[in-house]
Image (cartoon, rainbow over all chains, first blue to last red; front, side, top):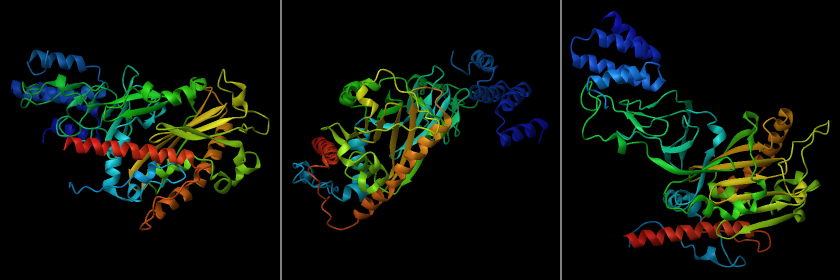
Length: 71
Length: 387
C-alpha cells in the first residue's frame, strides 16, 4: 500500500473529510490516466461540497473543464 | 368485500347524550392505526416539531412521523423546510441523527449530494467512474421530496398529503381565537423543553388534554386556587377543542419576580389561560406571560412521544424562574401519564363500546372523537370510490 493510500484510508477511518479533499486532489495529481484523475477529483469535489470547503468551486471548475461535471 | 379491517363509527356521531367513543380498534389495531394515520395525520395539518429545534442555518433534525422518515432543515437562507429524509437514488436515509449541515447533504451510500434547499447538486460517478452526469439522470427533477409545511406559534406544521386547505384557512378558527397572542415567542432554551414517552395511543393524550373534568381528581394541587367551576369548555366543532380557566395565577419567586407579559393583551388575560388541542396532534397553552406547545409524536399504535416546549414574551426571561415553571408543568403532565396509559390498557377489554361521555363535562372530548370519526369515514368513502 502506498503512503497516499494509507493516508486516505486513515482519513476515511477518522471521517476527516477536509483531509479527504486534499488527499483525493493529491491522488488525482498522481493519476496515470485522465479517467483516473477524473475519478479522484470527483471524490475530492464531493467531500468539498459536503464540508463547504473553500476549494469547492475550483474543483467544480476543473471537473467542468474535463467534461465531468455539468456546466 | 375488500376484507380490510374496518370499524363502525356511527355511534360516535350521535348527540353527546347517546354517543360512544371511538372503538377499541382505534387504539389497539395496527391496521386501523395505519388507516387512521393516513386519514387524520397525513391528510390534515399536523405538528412535526418547532423551529427552535433547528435554530441556525444548516441545522438538520431527522424526525420519524408515524413511520415516515422526514427531515426538518433550516437552509442557508434561514428558511425551514421539511423533506422526506431519503435519497432520490436508492432511498437511503440521508441524515440519521441531528447535526449541522456544513455544505451539502451527502448520501452515505453513493454520495449523491443535496443543497439545504433540497436541490440535487452532485451525482458522483453516475455516468461511470469520474463521469458525474448522465443523460438519463435529470438533476432538476430529482431534488429532495419536499413536504408542505407552515410555521405558526413556532410549530412546524406539515401536510403530508398536500391536499389540505391552505394553513391560514384550515386553522382560521384557532388563529382568530388567539389573535391577541400573535406576538414573538421566545423559546426558553434547554431548560424549557422535555419529553415524555407514554405507552398509549396518541389520541388518548389529546382527549385528556382538552377536558377539565379530570382536573380535581388527577391534579388535586390545582384545587387550592383553580377549581373545576373556574373552567370553561372551548368547542369549535370539526376543528379544535379545549378548556380555559378564569383564575390563572402567575408564577412568582420569593422576591416577587414574574415573567414579563406578552404585549397588548386584554385585561381579561390577567387571570385567564387557555389550553387547546389543535387537531390532530398539537396541544397548545397560552397565558399572559408564557405559552407552550406539546407535540404528540405517534411511535406505534400504543406508544407516543410527547415533546414539550415552553415559550416566553422576552428573549431574556429569568433562568431560575424558567426552571421552576418547567418543573411545575412537568409535574402536571406526569400526573396525566397513569391516566392515558390506564385508558390504553383498558382498550384491551373485549367488547368495550368506546365508553360514554358526560353531556355536561365531556363536550370537548366528544368533539375530538367526532372529528376523528368524520375524517376516517371520509377517507374510507374516497378509498372505496377509487376502487
